[in-house]
Length: 121
Image (cartoon, rainbow, N blue to C red; front, side, top):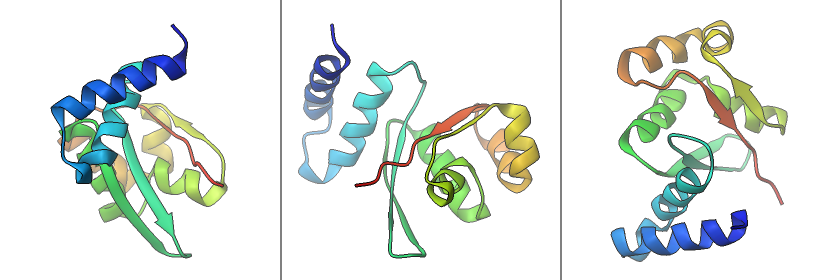
């Protein structure tokens, strides 16, 4: 089944689990995590030059990873936004590029690799 159809089906399933309209970002993140070869997903909005807002995550661990980037001020999502291109990082790359984020990430989650994709209009 094509990716788009799988995503629509996963989004419909997430809507039954999270029916409130304000939970749309969580539904989108869950649908992404279900159809892509990933364990979790998070969605963050960047606006103006210095404003960012985590919108939703597929699960608690992904939400924690998003929060840790913002509290440490570094991480793959922030780097992808700044560069305007995808950032793929395994554990060694996370440790080398964002040591403050890495220390918190390994202490508080099981996440050891990430991919961050900036989506722009």
